[in-house]
Length: 117
Figure 1 (tube, rainbow, N blue to C red):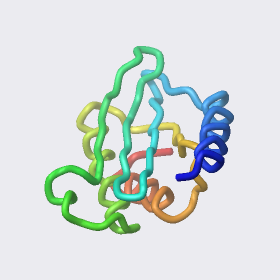
Figure 2 (figure 1 turned 90 degrees about the horizontal axis):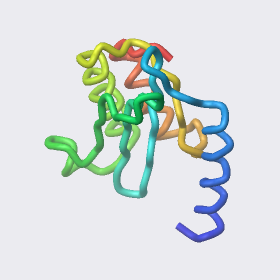
Figure 3 (figure 1 turned 45 degrees about the horizontal axis):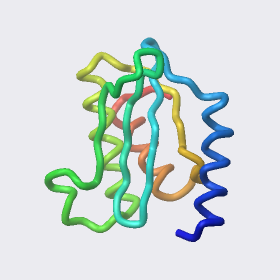
């Protein structure tokens, strides 16, 4: 990624983060997307800890290409882990990425699994 594009994404992410803050009652579902993998974390910003996490580098997903289907599977995986940790509602942090394509697929996968945004 070029330095200009990376700087633009960082600026957008900081703008989003000014408004989006996770708490114990409603943690933040943060997304990071690279060209090869996608990562999702459910973060309690008050305590400063990650409640649940999933990525496309895990187990059965590791050998697959990063597509919308893979991103949706990561969303379902992180939602299942969040539910196990007692989290039902989250705030979505798109990480400066457009809510489109793989980021949207991850969010839709998490919603399918019962996570409420």
